[in-house]
Image (cartoon, rainbow, N blue to C red; front, side):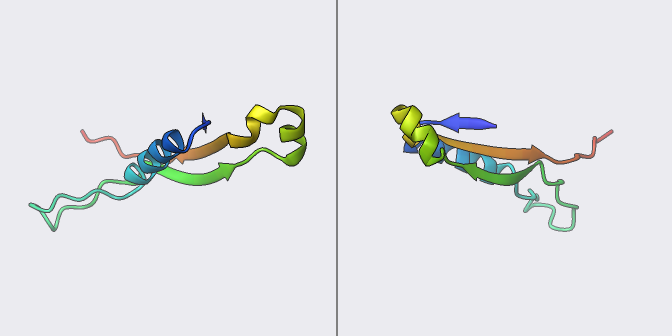
Length: 75
């Protein structure tokens, strides 16, 4: 779970989640099994109007969450 207050921070978090949620495969070994997915993007949460009324600085906050999925351990 990450809370960002600026669009640039949110972009970095969004790109990190996207980069780590894709199955990676080696182009040099196209028949090798892809690595398992590492993150499952759950979504984003914005402050409610009541929260912004109580704390105006919260208006730009974005909370992004991702869930770690099971990974196989290579022996």
